[in-house]
Image (cartoon, rainbow, N blue to C red; front, side):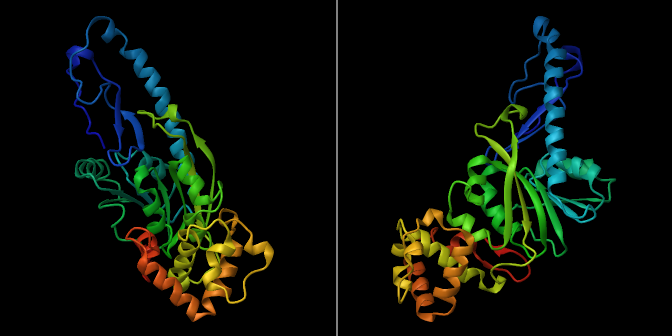
Length: 337
């Protein structure tokens, strides 16, 4: 987060109205909160016409704040789940989303923040609110809740992939909503065509987008389109949790061989080939049902195929192996990334 700018003296500009904060990590917009009109590092006093214009500027920013609050409230509602469930705010910042969750939900709110200065602000702000738990931790290393929970978060954009993998694959995860970049939402849902990420997550999570958030409603405005991504754990998993690492390795094999079609990509695993309809299908057109079917037929019942995938994985550079992307399954919660 960009640290707050101390208000200039009342004698210079009177009561200032708006504080603008932004995530340092990943450029995600945070919120417009009541505070002061000032750019970070810009501390000079305003006089004359500039000072006279402050009420008008405050009104504009105030309207933006109201719009953003509506989006935050919508985000909390889209998180779903029983209102009494624990709600996790990942990257809580100055607490605007935590405040919205506190007003709408009836259970506890876990506000996770890495920046120590913001943690101190959150701790002071909610010192007398027993329902809010402030935790100082990295989003990707914080302990996962051992009770059912939902997520309502506006996290740094550069944590989106790892955050989804770690938090939303936890056995106690119920549902959630995140503000994310539109291109990321397309990759994770497969709306632009199957991706390694979409096929890896689909057996475990139902993921959807549909609520766009206008960049102009954030201050500072992000330079990419943003949407609200919703997620819920499938009531009946399409792949057993214990089989997840093997399934992820299979999906990685499918994409990392660099083949255009399923037949080309999976030829080393098939003893008798595929039907023409499957063999000629483009990898980007594979749906989760077919991916699970091929995994079941080619890998689970064939130890030789499983060994070939493991050998292939071992030869991949670090960062492109399935265990680098998804880690291993932590029996107490999520994938260890």
